[in-house]
Amino acid sequence: MRDSFVFYRSFADAIAGLPPEEYKKVMQAIIGYALDGTEPATGGIEYTVFCLVKPQIDANNKRYENGKKGGRPITKQEPSNNQDVTKKKPSNNQDVTNPQPNVYVNVNDNDIKKKDTNVSKEKASRFKPPTVTEVENYCREKEYRIDCERFVDFYQSKDWMVGKNKMKDWRAAVRNWARGNQLELTAKPAQGTKFNNFTGRDYNMDALELAMLGGAAHEN
Image (cartoon, rainbow, N blue to C red; front, side, top):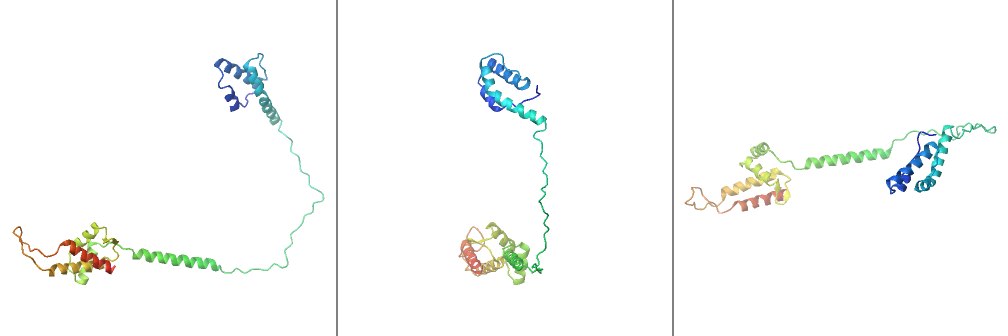
């Protein structure tokens, strides 16, 4: 008599398609034999299935009984009488090796330092858009008379692009902007219109911008 047994998936798959009544009889036959060792007294499908699963149930029960007995006894290993203990002697030709500096590590460290330096220089050379205050200070130093806030707003709207290229030197752009202002001041005046009192000029802002951007691109 046992308290449990192993019910395999193959058992369930084999009887899954049986009608409910026959399924019940087959399950009772399997459970009765696995737990109590009782074989089915009648024939029919339950006996047929029982004959198929009986060898597996018997094998599992045998393993279970052997396990309760502790299984196969452990064989003690006796030491052999002819075993000799061999002591390892130090070799006479062993020389003491003085540690040498690792040249390859030093080389690698130097390479890493050079790479870090190059990366730092590259980051330092990247363009940083100026503030209005920086532009004002530069114009004050060079005595340029431009609208610094307009300069910054203009290039911010263009994402600090000079033509199709990213701006590299905003100071060069300021110089060209100042030249553009000078060009604007020296442009030939035209007749005023009846709609305003301001004097027109014989150039347009697109042409002026093109001249400014072209000069900045050359300086970059």
